[in-house]
Image (cartoon, rainbow, N blue to C red):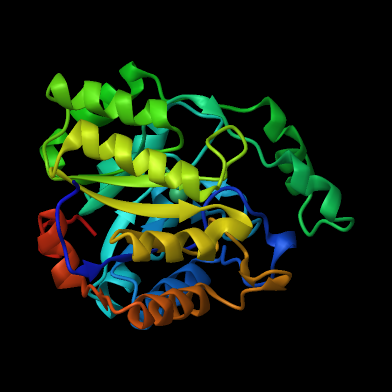
Length: 311
Ligand code: KMH
Ligand code: ZN
């Protein structure tokens, strides 16, 4: 069984690299909007903020540390939430480019994607006619050509490059095989317990967003990692709230945010990240669980502390 715990960590993934500005007015891409929405999400109950940067003028995905620099200190000053910087923010660049923001800012956490895969959102292209920025349509349409590259060598590179920073990874596992990849990496000494696994369901290219699949992932993780792990669930698109609710019922942690779904309920766009956090918080509490504070999340995940980051 996974480590027993009685608090639920809510992670909020604020903007990501899938959705584009045309898809929702609420999706933040200017630095001040990313900062504002992250802070509001923390105030609503998120103890972990999973962050990507965007180009502040065009909304295109960015790995440029200068763009992170525009919002990280503001967030840190305004909230005690744990900052988690993505290392998976581009489907088109090298792992070295993807690690650079985490290497630069030494956050308490960063994401680490546990296998290579197709990663596509091209079906979204047909839903929009007028695109706000000229990069958006091709970016979405061509995602059926993207391979999300996370080879064993890439994973080792992330682990070794970031080892001096004592960063806890959010191990993103999009299919059962990724759990075995993670187990292999632990066996060869790349990661130390307690590990934090994010089960990712519903990405086109990964496992589908079904409860059976979540149970299968969880059982497999129990078998592989015993009680040496914490787990959380991210459902993409319409699966976000239903799977987060299932995770909370099963005793797991949850991730919401506009990175993973633009909706608050079927057919209705969310107005903000905080709206999604507030909703899952209500659900978690109605189910009889307590939402973890940032301090409790730090304890559960054995984090180094905000005073040891470089921003
Ligand atoms: N949006 C998630 C499905 C990363 O940042 O490393 C993928 C993700 C990857 O969060
Ligand atoms: Zn992400």
